[in-house]
Length: 319
View 1 (cartoon, rainbow, N blue to C red):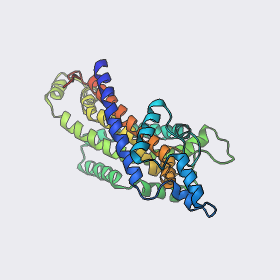
View 2: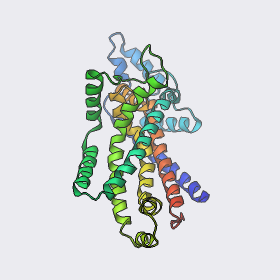
View 3: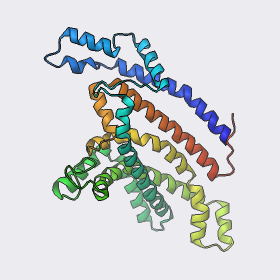
View 4: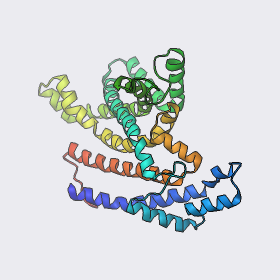
């Protein structure tokens, strides 16, 4: 297991290198650039723009800029933010706590709600109930995140005044745990909507497949209770695909939180990514994308390891 994990981590190095090269090229192919923000200022002349360009190293060829950035990334210097004038990693680290809190809460909601919902929809005897749960799951997959967030803010914040309109804390408020939860729960639930709907469908399909297998019939024939058969035998096997999904989704939720953080004004990495795109803040963008790629790779590795632990029949061996 340990040697497999080390091999996967070593394989991640060329993967991250290719990802960084592609992202760096795409960012520099986009129209405009960091100087567009300065050029729009009325008091900035061409000489000033040239000095800024020289100071930022933007007058070098793109391959040279990439090699300088790569060398800095390896040594821990990911460049200065064009917008904030501070190290990019420092800017991101200030927002990372909020994003981890939002994504972690969303994952907890996703797991806590998708498993019982999928289990209930698979074991429901009533045909109307089964069809209703399928429709609800389809709606959860189909509803756009930004639209759902705006509707929640319009109804529960603007009209009913039940939740805050956005942010992480109330300005001038107590800034305690209750205030934090009031701001955290709505965006976390919105972000969890798609995973809940998607994962519950996988659990439903897995349960419907497992409960018709021979070992389940054998467990029933031994006189085990229905609860024991479902939770100790069937559900454990039906959850195996969910392990892979959670590993993949854990890293991608930070990227998916971009829209949710923007709608709810949540001060996380997703909102910072949107601001950096507007200002063409290349160092912050590159650092954010690389961090997301690392999280996805770690999530994939964690899913493989958990899959092997959950199913002893699986052996992680090199090809």
